[in-house]
Image (cartoon, rainbow, N blue to C red; front, side):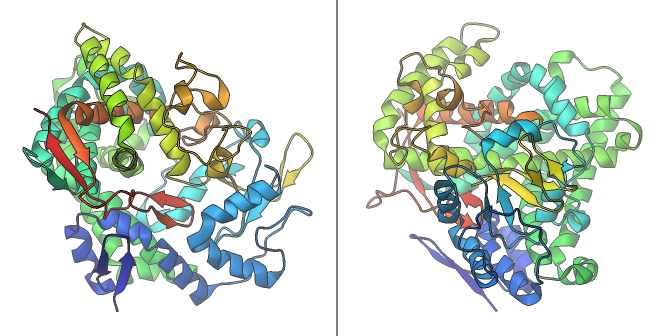
Length: 529
């Protein structure tokens, strides 16, 4: 049996389940196509072994699509492909109040909450308002290994990484040109580029420079393993979702080959990373300016966390979390700029000024990238229309949880915040239906409070792309700097446009609450003189 996915540019036949592992290992756009198949696998699993959910609903809280059993069942199927309009409908009908979004997830229909409750929830005990549980459910962590509850990595990212971010970025900046020279074609004349493949490879190189220095960023076996870990991990999770819970242990071992492939990738990671750890331990000291993420997690590991195999797995997992989320942003921005080329000139001028500043001594890379307020603005505006996720702050409530106004969220409820719908609220963003690339710098100062803050990494109740509170993405500052470095290099070194005859940006792929850049999109590049 074969499946086909569609985009405005290409129809491609996907392999049978038996050939999936071979295809995953060879296709340059495998991850995003797999994500496009999420609705299919969810629907198959739902129809195969759907059970009535014994969910406790809050009285008086509306359910998008209707509250009778037949309507809810129909809405769960609709959510596989029409979640964006459903979330907008719920947000607008309740005027930003609470509503239920019928979901095909085994966790049940999701309670979408107003942002006013984030203050109550952001400091709640993790055991009661559980983020990891939602992640482990989404990616079948019991069998794939995704969703470690170790606090080591977030502590290191919030601590030594963010503290030393701009020292690290000096090294990452050096990697940018090397990565482009090795990954991009020469582009001496107009050349069509598979932008999804190239940007993913470059992000893998730059992120690996952060993770473990040149020893990782220039190691092709490692960078490919990091990319494959995300691709195959997603395939494994979606393959397992086709089976009922009681059959998953058997399926993980015998019926879903991608699960075993994950173990093989972990062995590759150990083969690369363990010798680096051993070499560093033997050296005993390392200069502070040469330290990287691998060094910091080794220093702060305690007890069983000191096992080199555990540390190798942690590095793989951060790559899984960061690689494709970071790649999606420049891909979407390139699509936006090709569709609206009037923005390229101002961004080029700003990038040139940034580089001119960056030649002025220590610390100049930091100031140069932070001065890119127009780039910040257009990325933020693009993510209003093309967010990676339509919802954020997703949690599982593990015991009845009272909020400050007396509302009690029932145990077992999956919650979230409709971030995309909020970004379309005219009370926060005047004329929200219009793309205004420099919306956030219109006052001429480049800084505003709240919803209008130009800073892309700001995590507030009107800009929730990076989450909120203590669990807001701790790595967002590195991700933003990395993406800006890539875009500055492109703006200064290439002209780019869509292929002849194409004017519209490639349609996004929607898979329930995920919104992904179309991997079939192509961009023409030509080296600047």
